[in-house]
Image 1 (cartoon, rainbow, N blue to C red):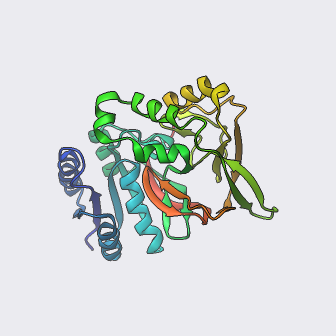
Image 2 (cartoon, rainbow, N blue to C red; image 1 turned 90 degrees about the horizontal axis):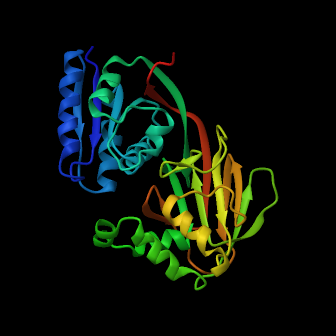
Length: 297
């Protein structure tokens, strides 16, 4: 019986590097007797539909890209209720998910790992509204809005300083919103929230900001920011480092329902892209995927 792997990538990302790596992966797998099917199409809804349609033919799914590309693929797997082995060739800017599981970031090394498959590990996944994967982070509030304001030309010209400029402009102008948080088996809490960061790992943007909490999501709430907090706030904008800040409330949970306590509309961002509006329901699904990982010594 022929074994077939799917190889999903965003053919429009970057300068075509993902497509080159996809073909290199297909050639390498063929030498190991594994057939492949390249999966790429413009637009997230079409990509999700393509993966779901192809899943019954596949023994494994290889994903080439960063956390955003992983989000599309894993969202398809969640919606299809599929349990399939996955391999990752990281090609994003930060690759939080790949870093968490110590996957090689060099494409040739990642391809070799997938071909030899020395080990697999059951990994969890955060799911929003039972339909959308959260691979790395979900955010809402003022800093999430800043990401929408910064233009691509500004990022290319000024880098992180463009975010600092926008961040400073927000100080004192946009107050915290009352947000209602309902955790499993606990009464609901309405907390002032200037910015909310929810992650699946203890690090974001390559910076460790929280203690480990296996099987749980990390929730960090940034309260009102005024001019007295401007220096630590700028440090946060530059580094993403939330530790040791008195303005931060940090929580962990396996599930949460989050609702705006006012009539104001609040839009979330998932893995960097605009997503659903509050209210949302989040669940951490333990041992959801079998991930190809390096062998442990």
